[in-house]
Image (cartoon, rainbow, N blue to C red):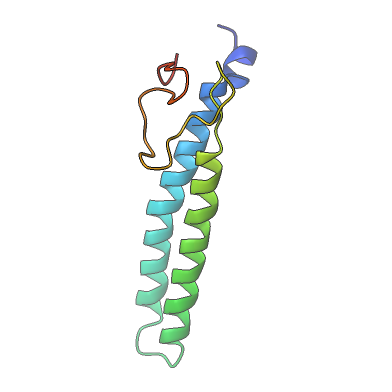
Amino acid sequence: MTADSRRSSPWTDYNRRMRWFFGTWMGGFAVSALAIYAAQSTRYEHVVFWLSLGTWIFACIVAKSALMAFRCPKCGQRFFNPYWPYPEKCRHCGVARGR
């Protein structure tokens, strides 16, 4: 497998989307916690709390939507089941994740 084929692989895109989602989820939590901690005992404490929480939730929704939009490389249908977001195989054709 060459470097160009690895870069254009649909599973590379899947892994990128998964890293983006988990990075947003965990990184957003850490950034929000730090912002809230830094704003303690200021008059803008509540504003910082709601602004960081809203931004974090919005970023998680965008990242999760991008992850859920991933299409199966074999059949072209959506790979993810809306009720189970971390499947081992395509819900339509059964191709295993990463193959």
